[in-house]
Image (cartoon, rainbow, N blue to C red; front, side, top):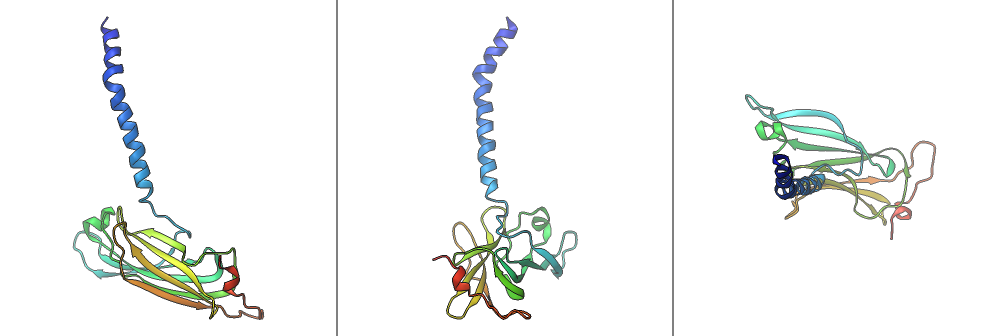
Length: 189
């Protein structure tokens, strides 16, 4: 009798609670999936870091310089420098990073386009705060001058930042090969 009563209580009271917890975990999982870094390229390579603000017991504020290859175009590499917050919030990963990001892209070999691309296509994206802010490096083509143009900026769900940096990569012959591809041939119309 006692066991039957316990089973009835289980069916009536605990099932909705378990269903709610499952739904909550699925919802939170979907919400945090948007928090993870969305990348068009692989993780950038850390070149070096320099401390800018000393903190006594927690990590220092730093400037970090990273390098990455354009995933859609062989022969182009970009380097960018981002501030990284120290302190307790930076240590546990919840500090909102500032939007001061610098960018330099260069031709490092013969340029080979892997596929057609859209103007303003993402090359790299990385989250800059726990929930809302992300940094993006995008690529375009100056068709008239046959130049690849890269821009880095940060944005939020509510408002973006006007702080940005732009770098141009003129497509030049490399080595003995005299053929210079035209970026206009690779831009999706």
